[in-house]
Length: 297
Image 1 (spheres, one colour):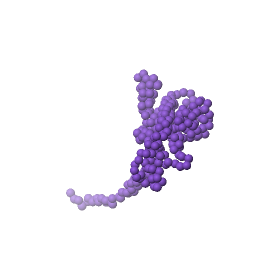
Image 2: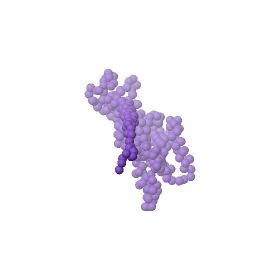
Image 3: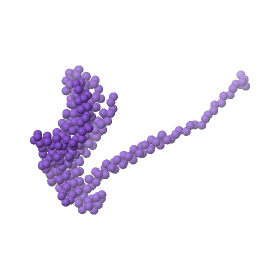
Image 4: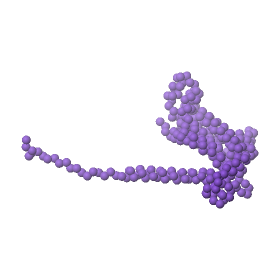
């Protein structure tokens, strides 16, 4: 067979296209900026805590000479002097007020949120919007009415005067968070529970609440920090030192002619430990509870 008439095909091989390295560098730059921002945030957030703990172990002389230097000796004198004062009374009052307030907030808001998320009743949407409107009211404009109510009810100058305002003003945001979370829980789980003979309350208690643990932890920690650090209402509704909560008690450490800064920092350190430890223990549930409301299926 002759190959003279056959056409010879040639394949043109072009140059290999260059792969842009810009996406790789952009990803690395984005990662680097994330680390830089995280470092800046850590420094800003950790510096006051470091200063607080560092100062708590110093004497007044060491603090005045060099506020940022390490103490010559790590003493517990300031902590002992603070604990020997009325600090245990202030701490106990704060524990009672905060504990009772958080329990009532979680109980009432979870029941109300379940009703809004699962039940149908006349005026449901307007009533829900009315509750949410409470989030827009500055709580401190109600100081005078609350003051008058506590005197009328006979609870003025007692820790009971704080529980009502703390619970009432925390309910709107708590109901909103839990309603959004309850709405995500598949209704099929509750339907199966009803088929098994559970009453609505048993379904709520045995099925819905265990699944809503992240949201409940978020509501509890959020309101715990708010009640633990609240100062304005406590300063208006409490007068006796035996009824003071921790923020008011810390104010008593400020003298008329001077401030024992190391003792104040020791008291602040002791007062901060409960909330810091609780947040560290439940931080995963708090984050998942805050983000869950935005992930509606």
